[in-house]
Image 1 (cartoon, helix red, strand yellow):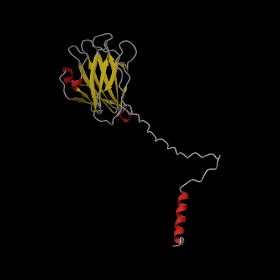
Image 2 (image 1 turned 90 degrees about the vertical axis):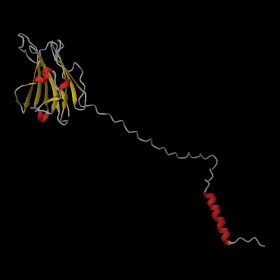
Image 3 (image 1 turned 180 degrees about the vertical axis):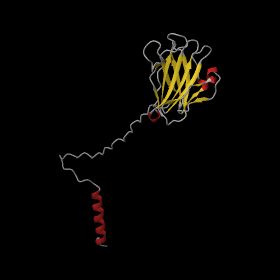
Length: 220
């Protein structure tokens, strides 16, 4: 039998030969530098910058913040004890009267609520006074607070703020310390808290000039 190659078989052989050659690199001439393979460097994944937690808009005050320089000056401290509640401490061992003022800010700047505690001949005299649109009302006596048996809240009509009655601690034994907690009933209203004290510079029950502290912002 003859070994004659058919045209179809020859074409198949040629295709296989070209395919095999395509899988190999062309030879490198002697002495020719071999090119380094190209390496693709992937950029590291971006790390998100840490997000700082915003500080509360109402910072805790230290016990001596709000002082007025000089002997017999009042010490006012304010600290948050809840989402809308603050504890206020007013100290002046030389005082015979203590005053706390909660005032509106911005468009409410002409509204305020004042709590006065004065030393009496038998017990403390406690009054509250409203100022609405710059007009002051008459002081209102708070007999339940004076007796120490008040419950619930004593609220302002001029501003969205209330005194939590059971938290009221009156000056006692010459410590000159008034403590109470206030709650804001409308979180959207910004307020400011300040205080003042007065003594008896000459005659008993005759108050001398009031010395006022700096105001603390109670932001919305």
